[in-house]
Image 1: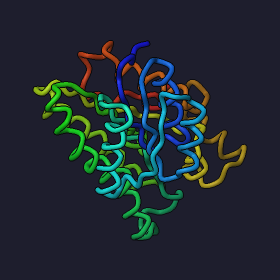
Image 2: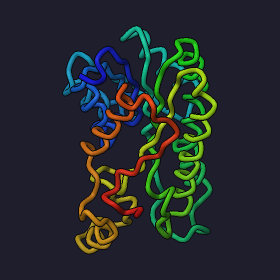
Image 3: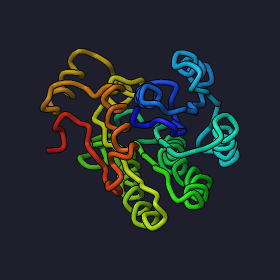
Image 4: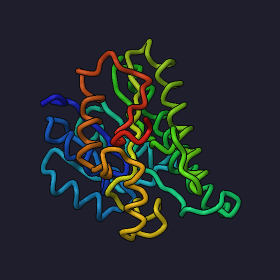
Length: 248
């Protein structure tokens, strides 16, 4: 029960890594608001997790939606202690100059702007209560970029730098900011990263991971639980790889 008494928001919690994080948080005693633009997916996960989970339909790239999300956590659970910025998108593998402007804007809106919008609402609350943890889900792509995913790679590099900058600024207020860098995982985004989900393409990706498997929602949930718990109270500004050794 490492998160007993904590209230968390997990964006993109209706599937993949977000669902894994929400599940682990519930198991460790937290109450969780699952925020996802897929209302049915968010509701499905919340229902499976029981009375300590609620869901809300949110577009994390819209300021009004983000403010309503934070208000919903307060209304449902009476507090907010943890924010997990997990929602993310990518583009299909292709030469960087061929990524369309709409696709580029979508990546920046969801992977980058959403973190800024959430911070504008959550940070004043965390400062006032003198505690809180913000966990940003970055990627090994921000450390060791894969070819033909340039703008996705760049967005995750931004997340890592933002995590470090936020950590330095917010430390005097008792607020920690950390990140996780997962390798490609068994999530709905896997096919997007690979371009096609075939045994040959999976083998190509797995060959770059020394431990020989993709990351799982459970892997991310375990790591997120530690970083958001009081056991990690001396850890801030880190971007911890959950990558089976890919970035070594």
